[in-house]
Image (cartoon, rainbow, N blue to C red; front, top):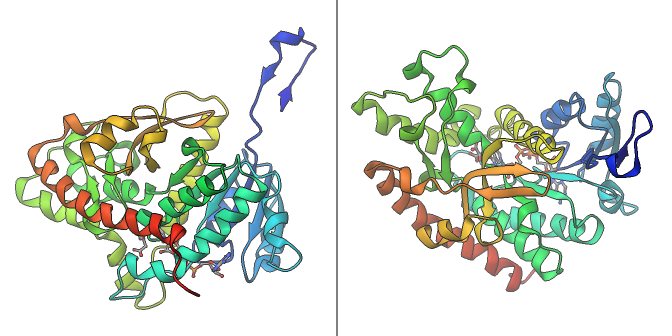
Length: 348
Ligand SMILES: NC(=O)C1=CN([C@@H]2O[C@H](COP(=O)(O)OP(=O)(O)OC[C@H]3O[C@@H](n4cnc5c(N)ncnc54)[C@H](O)[C@@H]3O)[C@@H](O)[C@H]2O)C=CC1
Ligand SMILES: O=C([O-])CC(=O)C(=O)O
């Protein structure tokens, strides 16, 4: 899109990437609805397209009464609904899939969610292959490799445009450390969280907090564990009615909004996200050090998406190095499972 106010010489026209059509796949769900509400209220979003296997006409009608910029449409599968929803998309956010119940691991969701993510990303490859893809559906450690393999198979993979949304881990780390910071606004403390998005694959790096935080020695391990297993806390509290939805909608919105601002040219936006390391500048060194191709690290966002993966591994302390070892082992299996699913799908 070319934005011209008063007449300018041809070469001085300001190029503004469009990045204004957002699509939510799984928009009628526990995350999908509040996430769509936040996106509808975001002045940066011009159009919001909602897709789900149920309920989108109602959700879209409801949100359409809000007096904000975004034009809203809702689609169901019949009559090429997915294709219509995805047409022209700049950013596609995927919270489609089943959530956990008490006693389940995120990996237990693979059986159902792997196929859902594969099929939705196939639709993206066909209709809007240049869109930024934000994967929320669990298990993220495996669903992101699935998305990558689908895009690779279609010859459309751009690693800078695929993100596993691990922002909720960052949000939890910021929130849970607050009792040690004395800071009124927990979001003012930056805590990098690296690795993956399940249990021990989640590695919060409190030693790299900015501003620095002094955590009593006996409080550190429980704090790390709380971030790693924060999802279970919500699953248990909801007692079978699902997992984190409202905090995830906030986190998904936070990441999407940062990406929009970055693609519009705002500089200095960095957020941890789970990316395909070999495809992102700076990622090779991290892949070499961790032995995995997919990993969440603070990533500099820009007009082309994931512009640089920041290697903060040399800065971590000995306790965090131990956490990293457990993380790597878990991640390897999760990644292989996702890649294998696309190339050797289980019989239907
Ligand atoms: N990345 C993260 O940090 C987090 C991820 N999650 C994950 O997000 C996913 C969604 O969670 P909730 O919204 O609580 O679940 P939910 O069950 O409330 O909503 C999921 C929605 O997906 C829809 N859906 C199912 N199959 C679909 C398909 N083929 N196409 C389009 N839509 C489809 C369902 O109809 C439903 O409306 C789960 O896998 C959950 O584990 C949840 C919290 C945090
Ligand atoms: O715990 C779950 O299943 C949902 C999730 O990913 C989270 O809350 O971090």
